[in-house]
Image 1 (tube, rainbow, N blue to C red):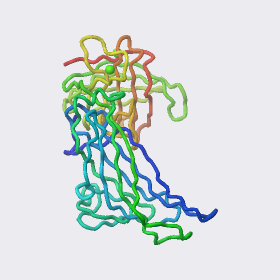
Image 2: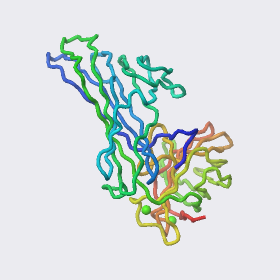
Image 3: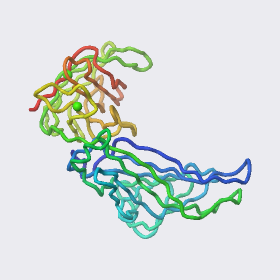
Image 4: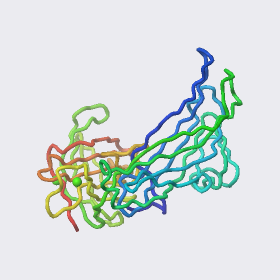
Length: 346
Ligand SMILES: [Ca+2]
Ligand SMILES: [Ca+2]
């Protein structure tokens, strides 16, 4: 899998959990707690780093108190057993949302200049910390045999309430932990220089109108730097998207959960990427391939995933999201009603 600017963009399955320490002083008791989340790059190729990001958010404390974060660690539940990162708050880049303050290190707390070296951070109510992508584990061949071919993990934040705001006199500054888990599909077979060709129609609700036929045709290379990329989409009486180039990392791989397997001569079934769309992953929890082009002659960005699930193309799938001043389109994931997608080794 590739990288953008040396850093993976995090995609995939994230789970948000909230931990509440319940006050018991009556009907107006405040709830003290934090929310935590985690997301990892999916799919994850055998031999690649398993890369994740984590979040802690002070948004559920109904007393609106400030919380303190004092630790961060991560465990990957690999086929060979649990693998722990050890303490990693100080070694992980921290990106702030709101007026977070940390001690022990330096940095602006922005994505471009994350805070590094923190020993503790204060999060006023309404603020959060998101980590930069981190990895402490390399995906092993045996991980492919985990249930559902999924590698899972658990992040743990150590935190405590500061009890500055304590309307019910029921707050505690005792140490707490907040955990969150996520997962990534482990893939063995990746095509670095192949391509997918074909086209067809799916039906989508477009700007409130149901069952609009969306027709596409493409020849897309698994190497995103290959200039020979084409993708045309037409719908609803004259709307047109035209792809100029792919702008992120692409991964062509065998999704073990896509059946039937591709026909002989091809080894992969999924063309996807490593980018979220509006914070969300796409078909089967994968990241999107992203390209730029024009929609109705205006500049446009497209997020898409296309699948070749064998012959004929009735199981083949397409998903498109186009952002442009010239049009909007959110179509799929949906199986083709007409057409066929076909992977080629070269
Ligand atoms: Ca497959
Ligand atoms: Ca097909």
